[in-house]
Amino acid sequence: MKTPEFSVAKEGLPFILFAAFAALLCAALQYRYAAFAGLAVTAFVTYFFRDPERTLPEDSGALVSPADGKVIRIEELHDDRFLHQDALRISIFMNVFNVHVNRIPLAGAVRRVVFQPGRFYAADQDKAALHNESCAVLVATAAGQQYAAVQIAGLIARRIVCRAEPGDQVRTGQRYGLIRFGSRVDLYLPKGSAAMVQVGQKVKSGETVIGRLRQD
Image 1 (cartoon, helix red, strand yellow):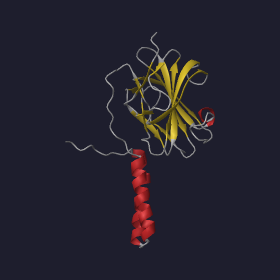
Image 2: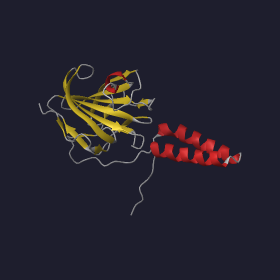
Image 3: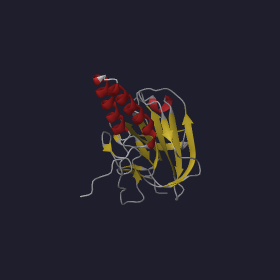
Image 4: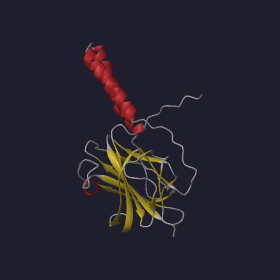
C-alpha cells in the first residue's frame, strides 16, 4: 500500500520554521520545558497548515465544498454585495483543527475579487458575515452562471490569503487560498440553486458535493 504524502501549505512555512528555531534555541540553552513547549507548537502549526490531496466527485456539474468544517447555515436572502440578487447562502465554519486550505467550488472564470477590511467577531456569529474582514471571489461558469465564495476572518484568524485574480481560469477543486487560525467560508448561489448538504454536516474541501447551480 502506498503511504500518503504529507504536505503543508507554503504560507505556513515561515510559522513552522520560526517555531522550530525557537524550540532548537531553547534546547541549546538547556531550557528543557521551553524546548518541549516549542516542539509542541511546531507540531501543531505543521498540523494546522497541512494540505492533503483530495479526490473530486465524478459529477462534473456539482459544486464542491470550498472549505473543510461544519455547515452552520443554509438560508435564502437578498445578496446586495456580490451577486446583487436573491441568493442561497451556505456557511461553513472552520475550527483550528480543520484543514484551512480553500478550494474552488466549480470551474469558471474569476470576474471579481473583493477584499473588505473589517472586524474580527467570532466567525459563527451572524454579524461576522457583514462586519468581519473578508475576501470574495466571484466566478462565472462556462454556462454563464455566477457564484461567490467568501473567505471570512474569525476571532483568532487575522490573515486571509487569496491567490485568485480577475481573469483567472480556475478548475473545480483548485486551491486558491487559506485563512489562518479559525474562520469561515460563505458560498452564495443564485436563487433556485440546490443545497446538497444539511446544517450540522461536516464537509471536506474539494471533495464533498455541497450544491448544484440553478438550471436556467
